[in-house]
Length: 190
Image 1 (cartoon, rainbow, N blue to C red):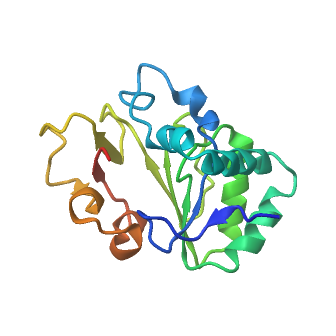
Image 2 (cartoon, rainbow, N blue to C red; image 1 turned 120 degrees about the horizontal axis):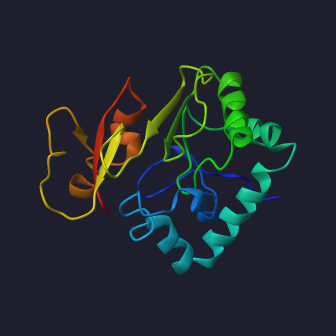
């Protein structure tokens, strides 16, 4: 059986990543989220790489199984201290989010990073090692902001850290900024 985690990614470096199909995002794909549907890099990857799309769809199905937490925990035991949840995809229900909270609680010495648009879910029971960055393209409640137009905006501010990936090709493994305490991150679309 193929593993759920990926262990090497051009952007993440050697940080373990978990991705699910972009079908999980459909609830959040609407006009109030600028750019999400039009610029989704994961959707483009699914179109260009059928094998990747198939794996992400298998992973989505796996999240709905009763043994998902146990399967994920077995894999996490053998990876480094940083895990990126949802390289593609998003939380599609409270039950699914709660599974990840349980996983993070079992690995207090590891750091989990999640970007999400699922603001209607309850994150209050997440442990300290479960970093959630709310993604809002409108900049109203965001911990991160994605610039889609290439034009300097009000978000090009000193209180937001600009992700070094696009300009410097630094991997997440090299940077680790987003895994820190209460980051505000500014992404340039890539």
